[in-house]
Image (cartoon, rainbow, N blue to C red; front, side, top):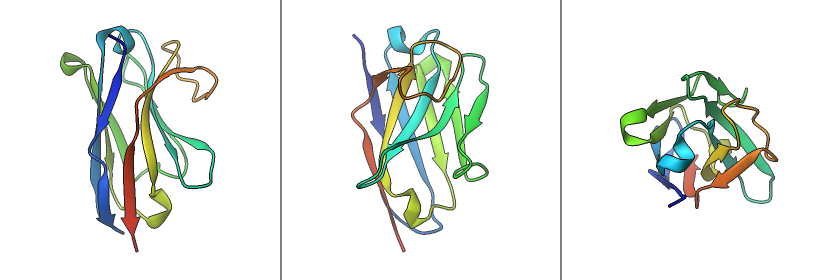
Length: 123
């Protein structure tokens, strides 16, 4: 079973917070970098953050200091805590897994994708 399942999206006012969750199958979770991506209406996919198997995290400049990514190995899950949200954060958020553990933030090296969860931030 190969899958990534996101949850936790919704509608929030500017300045608010949301926590996204992603449950991964064991096959995907083990030995891979797990990332969050987003796609706003009419825009390209944007890498948001990544976490390696060792727990090393990286963030896009646009979210650094506001978003925090974490993981729970016992649950094969990763999370994205999003604080101080702005309307510019409105997008469909995807959990994704790269081919390898080295987090590249590369769309090309991202092999598996979840179905996405909508995050809408009202002004």
